[in-house]
Length: 577
Image 1 (spheres, one colour):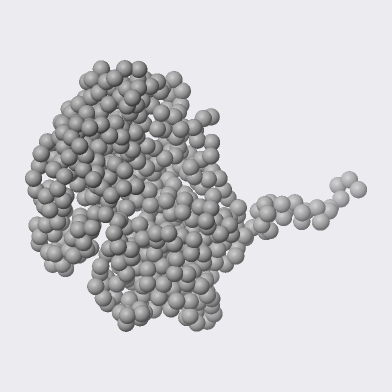
Image 2 (cartoon, helix red, strand yellow; image 1 turned 180 degrees about the vertical axis):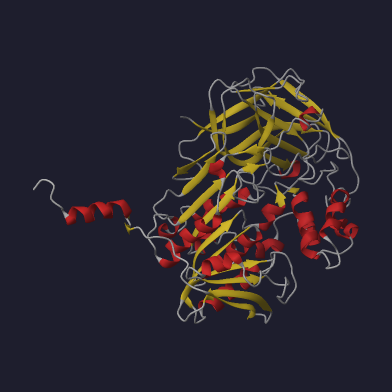
């Protein structure tokens, strides 16, 4: 009858609003239903008898709950830990542990070396506690992400899921980028992690610049005033030898049975590690059921996530990111079985800079990528922003080259941190080659891995070559997008390092990592080529001697070739509309 009430229809309409396709009824997030009980400085014994200080925050009631674990070298917090209380109020038992030799934990801090077994032993201990229901999720960023990856292949039966952010799982490949030591990342960090209690942070900050200039590199700690054994070990093992075995997942990704939500930033110092972890966990050798539980999210951030203003750019409201409700949604799904739709979302979520919006994708790199080459051109004078260097999609028809002198006593300086900063200051230098397109007639999206192929010769027996991708705005700002470096003796990854023959032309493949950026109409694409980026990377002294103990500097006469025979270029992952 017209106008009659149909309760069945009403129920169906109501259900349709809340059903997640293919998953049953969607559920709300866990609510703050509990008061919190704290147990501080609980000592958890490792297999060698060393006891690690662990703070436990859990619902103040009897019963079993899923557990969340964070193992950190930055302090395990104390009474009223806000983040831990947030999850404990919502039905999770949270364990935050000082890593070995840190805070109230016993043992000696030997950076990164003990995290696999210590992490596994802690997971085994948690899984057997009367307040744990046998399911563990881990979370945290940077080193705290590393403490998640290392024990994962050991297959604790209690480990269900991980949320590693801005992190890595291969320490060697983070300490050394294509043969170059990441000076400004690991030297200050080593000082911070080992400074005596009597030494203030300002003392380290004040001495930073002079310490980074110290030669030989292996004496940096002596110049600061105390010995750092692990820093000396890193500098003594530039190649990926057995020293690094305990600090890498290696070939053991197939042993990891956990779902993983990887989080990174386009300008993060550890972006490559974040992407590689996702790629390794979605490779063909991974069990299909595990492979489909892997996620990747990358925003426009540096090592600190979630801000809209990064470097010299404002990426807008969409760039804001609150990790706490994000983690709750994932843990609710993976540890409590709540069908909140997160599993059904596409596996990759990226922030497209320039357009400044989020977009879902089904894989990484994108299957529809059109890799386009932009070739270097000049009349032999591409030096500085005011030179004649050009960049376009046409291959050079004539033989030409550009020259500059790289002097390690006056290296090209790093501008800003890892964020988007105006590079015009370094583009005024004679030892920086600049190649720029004409203003774009249409928007051009570049999303994916970026690589430069550079044909070069040097008067030195060993040297460096750097490449930088830059977005040039109509007002002249030259905003860094991504960059890379290669040490000449590491030009072939399939053979041991070897010096080069002075004057001989070699092909160098420079990995600039990855990005997602739309070069807007009217903007220009620019590539910078040089031989230093200091102090982001250590200076190559050009002698071919052991870099950590060498103190002798020589200048290197560099030549970059662009011709039919030597087509130097940058390869951009273009996404056509």
